[in-house]
Length: 288
Image 1 (spheres, rainbow, N blue to C red):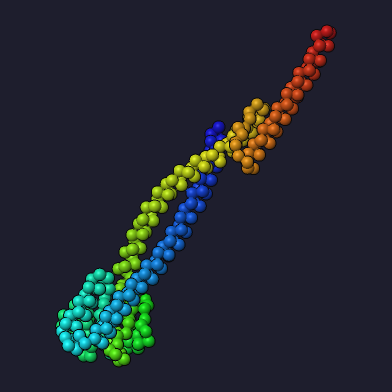
Image 2: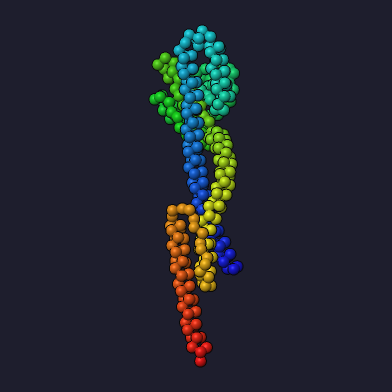
């Protein structure tokens, strides 16, 4: 009997483990695909936002340089530019600044004076020099990419460089840069936490469902094993309970019970024959 229970537990655990492994692998694959999709989406979204801010700054600068305000009130124009840079930098957490045609930073959110598109350097970014290759590329309509901006940054940033014109003259570029680690990782971590929580709840529910499903599949097999154990001991009265389904297992049980009926009839016939033969032998002996 202990051997039977051991086999029963082995069968149940085997299929329960298989179903559980399939579910876990499925969740793992879905998780990897989801994380890859989310990462790509966030990277693209981050780059698009960076490009939007640099284009806004470039457009504002171009309009301002081509308006009478920059000539009539240069201090006011300077304040407008710096305030715009400050607001966009605070709202976006981007590193936003303006460079002249030589790649020197001349305005950033920390700059409060000295705005001049031709000469003055930004004290905050005085050691920062944008490679001329990026300045030349920006003349052709601007660039947006994931890079270190020619070793300006130590880590990969989403970088956007847009040209600034005074009339037909190219005078500088507007640059916006955002570190991927500060944006993508933050959103990625939040989404990962939500996915793990949802996966945990789903796994618990699926595990419970798989547990009962495996038990339901294993039960007819256990009944068949009970039947074979009874038949091997000579008891053909046991019948396997039929299951209400139209599959191979249900058909097997029906045919198994039919075989049991035939075996029971054969056993009854055998016993009847043995009893009759024994009676025939006993009668002459009794007469003698």
